[in-house]
Image 1: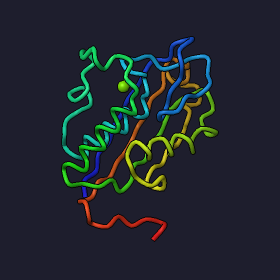
Image 2: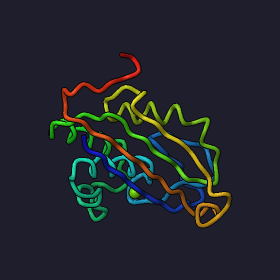
Image 3: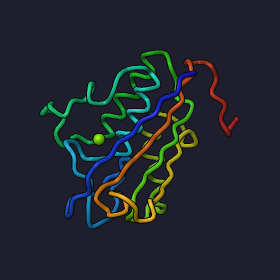
Image 4: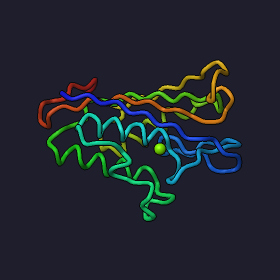
Length: 166
Ligand code: MG
C-alpha cells in the first residue's frame, strides 16, 4: 500500500466561473489559475502523484507550458489516473477536503464525487469530498481564496480492493 497527500490553493477572482471537482458551481467569484483553477482536482492529482512517488504536479503539468493554458483539470486527473494503472497500482480510496467560506458546497458534493470517480475510473464509493469553513479566519475566511487537501491510498493492482458492494 502507498499513501499520498496533496494540497492546493487558488485565489478567488470576481466574475470568472467557479469550478471544483470538475463541476461548475454558481458563485460571484471563481478560482484564478493557469488552468481552469480547479484546486480540488489539483490537490487530488498531487496526492496520487505523491502516493506513486512520482514528483509534483508542476513537474508533470508545468504552468510554463502554453498548451496547458485554460486546460480542463479533469484532463490532468485522467492522465494521472492512467499513470496509476501503468505503474501497477489501483486506487483504494481518495478523501478530500475543500476549505472555503463561500459558497455552500454541500449541495454539490455528490456531483463532485461522481465527476472525480469518472476521471479516475473507479466506483464513486472510493471517492469522498468534504467541505469546511475557517469561521471567517484568514484568507479563506476573507474569501480571498479556497484551499483543498487530499489523501489517496494506492494498492498493488489485483490485490483486491474491498468495497461496500462486496
Ligand atoms: Mg493548482
